[in-house]
Image 1 (spheres, rainbow, N blue to C red):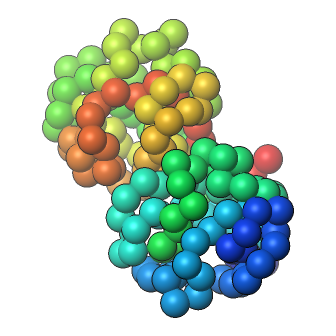
Image 2: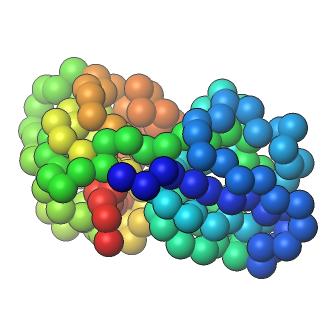
Length: 176
């Protein structure tokens, strides 16, 4: 398996000061002051707007992102990052309408650009990720705030970083 690598650039279109990263980093502020473009050379990454893996999350796969709007960023602030390690060949997760895995539930094994088309509500209060990793998006069609969920149990939406239980779409983290 090739080593994961990401390159951060201070200016748009891969210009200005840059920093190459191949490991988790809880504080990137000493390498660059702001980030306006990114190249993901290998692997899957989750970027955070604040140090210590806090704030808005952005999940990126292999490719070029010439400005922060291309990774659905709200600003040019990237202060920490980590490699997503639960990328596999199979995915299995289950969502519930209530906290602590109670109430109506549904298994998910593929991307869902509009959760409301298959789920009776826009709210997801708990989730178990049995295999793989996924991204919950605040709005349909993979827009809005992003929340990475890796293998594990999430008894309430705040455990995956959610500010509210509204989920509009789900995308599995997988090789293209």
